Image (tube, rainbow, N blue to C red; front, side, top):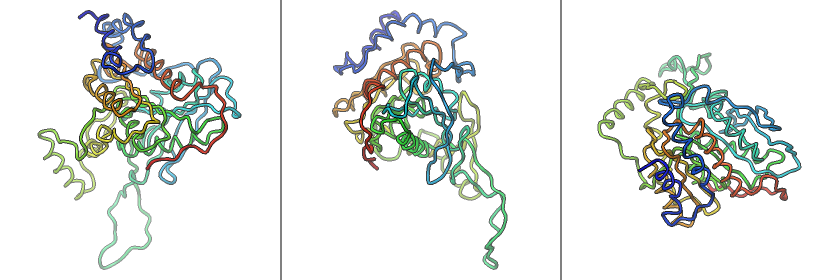
Length: 381
């Protein structure tokens, strides 16, 4: 099938399955030749991660920024950069979007999305999760460097000890908390309408934002890029063959000596992570909780056709079909021909950031609408 024909079928998925397309996919068709160029041009290939040049961006005319600190879990300080649209005034009530990075990445890699959203009139907030980037580490990331000197014969009530602070501690449950803390922060930002908050996530955080939407009704519009958790039964995630013994051995080692195995983590930003982190995150399964998403939340999935990490777009398409069957507004638009990391640059970025902004504009309302200040809707816990 020629690229142009395949692209038309992919872009029209929501219509061809009987679902109503909530935003136009015309931009995908308009750039069909550009998508094909991106996958055939050697300079545009992205195998194994993005490149530093992909993170560069220029602030749109009139958009301003400043760095802030927000807090999670009763006091752990986290880093974020705020983006404000041209002509922003604190007397307005603008919608806002929280933007989070992917697995073992940093906010600097996705700030350009926040800049684009601000250019469309939104307040945007790009965050670093706990133990990443400029954010601090929480109590779960602190370890005593020496063994506890207390014995049965002598109790030690006071002693100076050294601590190890663990970084890049991959924990999706913590990332859910970080998104929710960011939502709370931006709800209190002067000039932001607390009832019009959206969240954007990509790759690992594309699944995290679905988990957020399942427990927090404040997220009114959600964009999940290159993730697409398919509907799945509740209960423990199946363990792939051969990994069960590894999980047991690593759990024994961690319990007896305090540290298990480490593995290479991340793609664009290389680091070591605990093998345990991969196992622990199996417990955060957004596909098994899709029935918890309420009617006030609108979800856009943006999978890549040839995603080498997540797999084909069928997961996102199945999630869209399931949600739509429950009366939840959802749509899937596929990046034709692209691989996982190509969505962050060139045509992938231009089209993806536009589609996301279109979704937020449709379901958070026009950015310049001024409405009375409200206390915000209740959080479902």
